[in-house]
Length: 283
Image (cartoon, rainbow, N blue to C red; front, side, top):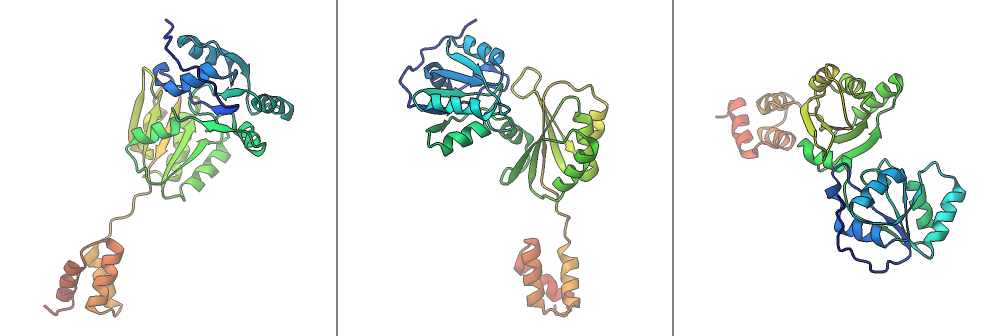
């Protein structure tokens, strides 16, 4: 049934509007996105059939044209010429355009041409997966899809293993087992989450080390769309007492040894000082 709303029809400034669309649940679109889609002169999209379904759901009758980043310079030139005098929107089939989806070349050329480019906030699969993963969010990198060929995929995973912060990758339903196996081979003990069918009926988040997840998904019949989030490398446990003994053996004074070990481990300097005194036979 159409979910027609009372949408704003306020005139928009000419230019390019980058509009995120739902990943699966049609109710995840924002009211501002609906306002823009109902007000622009034309919507450019990956697949007109997919976008038409979304617009029909909300009673929006915008004109649709197909666009992806394989389009030639002449098509982009025509689109940007149109944006000089009209408000136009760019959407992808699901999520935020440009984030592993078409739009980068069009946005880049629009900015270079001095056109107004407006990006709306909204659904993004990498960020949603990161939120669901329960893994560290203070530093993270997104890498899109793992390479499809085995050799390139393994080499890429080896490079990823050198990075110590949180990593986010996409993987296709046909290669989820192979992708997890390659990741586990490069960094078996790192914590991870396999996020499947986000915002959809069969949404699932599977937690474990990469080694455990690779073994688990090798035996599963995979369905849906996947995001893999890989947590930071786990730092080895440090024994402050052992470090104190080594520092004292290296000739450091009790005070110097306590200061050094406190800096390296985060342990209490005063507690380490007392322990160092005992180890040095001064207590």
